[in-house]
Amino acid sequence: MDASLLVIIVVVTALVFDFTNGFHDTANSMATSIATGALRPRTAVAFSAVLNLVGALLSVEVAKTISGGIVDDALITPAVVFGGLVGAITWNLVTWYAGLPSSSSHALFGGLIGATWIASGAGAVHFDEVVDKVVAPAIAAPLVAGIVALLATYLTYRMTERARKSVNDKGFKAGQIASAALMSLAHGTNDAQKTMGIITLTLITAGTLAPGAEPPLWVILSAAIAIALGTYLGGWRITRTLGTGLTTIEAPQGFAAQTSAATVIMASSHLGFALSTTHVASGGILGSGLGRRRDAVRWGVAGRMAVAWLLTLPAAGIVGALAGKVASLGTAGVVVVAVVGAGVALGIWLLSRREPVRPEHVVDEIAARAEAHKVAA
Amino acid sequence: MKVDWAALGAVFGVSLAVVLGLVLLFSVALRALSAREAERERGGSAVLPTAAAAVCLLACVTVVLHGIYLIVAG
Image 1 (cartoon, each protein chain N blue to C red):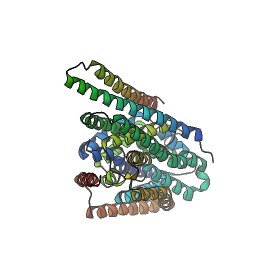
Image 2 (image 1 turned 180 degrees about the horizontal axis):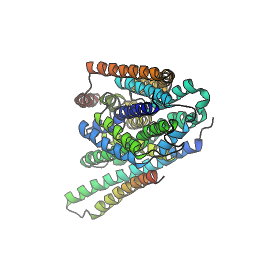
Image 3 (image 1 turned 135 degrees about the horizontal axis):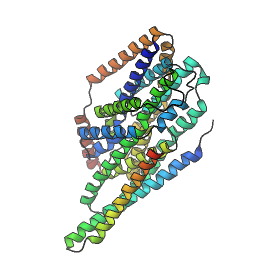
Image 4 (image 1 turned 90 degrees about the vertical axis):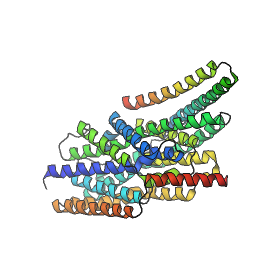
């Protein structure tokens, strides 16, 4: 296959991944605001899309880490990157169908590591880098966000006990919208960067860019737009899980959870951890549930989420490994992977149409849960 | 295999300090706003609570903007 045609296919696939990343992660920044009624669902996703776009244009630090850190760019080809992307997209779609807020970043890392490992050998994967920059933050980040959110929620409730209810209601809704904005911005600076890094890596492996080059402007713009469009589509299945499944969220908790999550993400990106915004957001929500009432967390849902987190890296890795192996066999291999990948995506989409989740459902469900919560209390 | 515990610890420490600071400032602002409403109902002067709320909210915004500045500049 013509090398430039392959590069175009990989770039398009990377943008498709970016798009799935957008709708997979809308919930992270917007679930709590939608759950407490601070923002209407459609307004929330439009707002988040714009801020993701802005965030994606702010920095290229994470993109540079991705294109030069985890795998050896001298030992892989665009076909390997293609396989890794197919693995990541497949896992993202499966977890979206199940309504599980798994990490898009880990799907991407898993797919890339799996494809590189099988196609180019274990030596092409920088495992110590993976442990330091991916695995350790994966365990630590949600814990940190959870503990911070727990203390912040407790402090918020204690401090505002004696404030007026009318002031609290208005104030926390405003605070929540501000913290959601911050979260969307943080998401843009972090996750859109990962796609920029992948496209840059592809261009380096194809010889179009020199090793260590910064992402070109068209890469930055297209990645920013793809993640914004995905965000605008809204991942309602996952929003339902995060907004109602883990714990019933009140406005002060949403405010505390999101402020914690956004701060942890920004602090970590500053120190070079390419962490999962999903894990941090979920940790924050869980922590804020515990901070208000210890029995307020549905541990069954939390457990299912944790299992999906553990599975993400290896599952995307296995699909990525298979796809990368087949794709590096030549033109026929790339075509087979593209056709099978598109078929799987179409299948999952058709399955999802049988039982669609729309924003109205999410809002209704939250109202019903809040009612049940009042009766129980 | 090495894990940069110092950096992870720094993330924890910085996040904890910043978030608790923000939450504290915001809560104080809400209490000041409550005091302002109460003062108004009593017909008294609301200057002090208004100023306190404004200072707290402004401090929140400053912390956030400085954080974004650090990301963009870094």
